[in-house]
Image 1: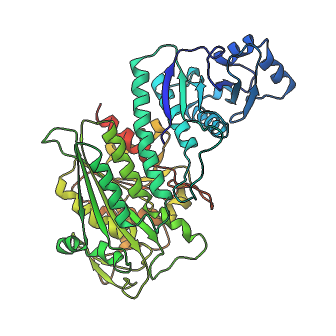
Image 2: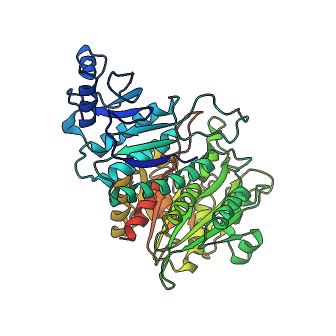
Image 3: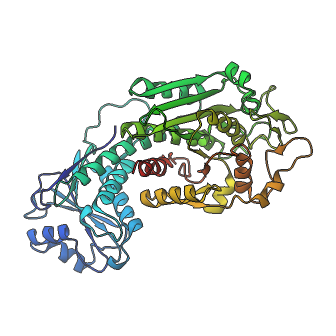
Length: 497
């Protein structure tokens, strides 16, 4: 269930809510709301600061109970760090840490005053949207494959009111955007978190059908193996041939723009489980390869959010959904595949399969004559080595498109970092037996993967997002993050002016 948001002009000291959230800085400076709570409680907060029991260190949270004179039974104080260092990232951290603390409390609602904080270069709408998205992200619970439980005895957070000086149109617009993006992020996270015995290519197609069935203006086409054979998608089908689960090519369309407007095309890698094929992966950590369809989940989540917002543009979302398995029919190192474009591909490693399904999907995308095509894929471990878990890798030769995507990432803090896509790297993909090899050797693996895809995007505007480091959190309890839904939705919102 998506968290519900509202705007309120109630004062923090008199609001009838289970919990009030207020901020304080590391240099003992109270925000306006914290100062009002302190004054009403006879200086209780300042006394706790003086004693050292409460600090304003960035990310610290302290829960206070039954402050005298304050209507709310709980006050959650959030550390903001040094006031002079307050920026978008510091504000986002405070938003996430306050929401993380809320998740553990036995309450159904709370009021946050953090939108009053001055964040240089960011307006009220941005602050409200950031608070809402952080709260929804932190309060998400994955329950799909647990034994059903009785209704919790204590309440769980369901609603967050955001304190504002005035109930403005800009504020309501920001909450509307937050709610739509949150739905898209949750949709993507749920798909990513499901196990591969449930979330297979057929399941992704079924989920796409629910999107189309429940939203007017959306159409769906699902291409089956026979359809792809007729189209000559030998690269995609080569990856799929080792699995008992047949491949699907999912095509969703939203027509929110004019009849003659060229669409924006989003393509997401949908490897629902990746064993590596014959080039099999090490056993340790292989369970995380259920996340190898997070590119697909991301573009589907973006599609959901765009339709919820009724963006006035045309959008096509393509998901090649395949399982990469090593049985007797599996494709092998040394095989030559013929892609839909006609280019032949020498397979040097069957674990470089994502690019093999994407290249046929990118070729198919051209029939929609898109004005821009963006693919998202958990494509390479090399990108994780280069950028870690914080930034997605961005590759494109289109300077304007690069600037637009980077700006969208900065706005949402779902950030990307640009990697070169120079022709200097193309030689690493040379093959003595086919037009191109599917890997480029040990160096610059993320870039050569992008170079491979670029061979199937000649003549149209295209960008590639490698989200291998950002699509899920590490560890046995790591969850899908829903990235790059915020980045892509913001990019589309920006295109609507």
